[in-house]
Amino acid sequence: GPRATMLIVRAFPIAVAVLFAQPTDAAVSPLTRAITRKSFVVGGMGTGAAFALRVPPASAVSGGGKDYSGLTISGEDFSGKKLAGKEFRQVVAVGTNFRGADLRGCSFFKADLEKADFTGAIMSGVSLEGANLVGCTLAGARLDGAFFTESVEEVVDFMDVDLSEALISPRTAKALCDRADFAGTNKATGVDTRESLMCT
Picture 1 (tube, helix red, strand yellow):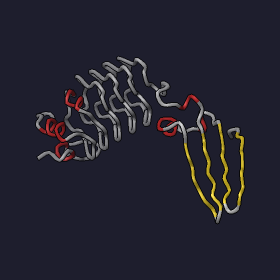
Picture 2 (cartoon, helix red, strand yellow; picture 1 turned 180 degrees about the vertical axis):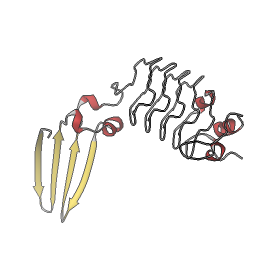
Picture 3 (cartoon, one colour; picture 1 turned 90 degrees about the vertical axis):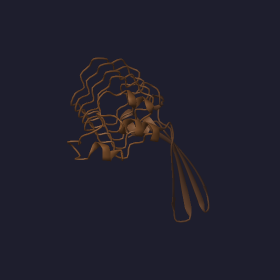
Picture 4 (cartoon, one colour; picture 1 turned 135 degrees about the vertical axis):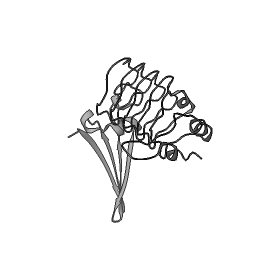
């Protein structure tokens, strides 16, 4: 397990423990590294209370190039790959093939996804905030709970997508509902595309 130095100060009825740990990469989950530099845990038992402070190593700092963040992967083939929870922040993925890939919970924040193909991909909870989606294909993709900005209007194919509970502005939602290709039924979930965005 990780090495640790513990300092304990005890004054009835309160016991305060401060734990400074340097966990290995294996000991820090990808979610922990992606969200925060510090993790605070507060607990109590009986009349005492314990407070623990854990500081991950420098490699856990957000923006440090985790996973595929900041890389150029244009034209590469990720079709069918299991990539759930990976970070693709500010990645350059022009014309990249993500067909049928498992991308649940991935972040594509400000990524360049021009002409990328996400046909049939599992993209539940994905963040596409500020991403360049010009010429991008999302046909048949599961996008339930995904987060979009207005750039999603640049996608060329929405046929059979599921956007249930997606985070999207009312103006952008209306623009999508007015499109001829925003129709069909998602084969994986059986959800009607227009109903998933509550189009009238």
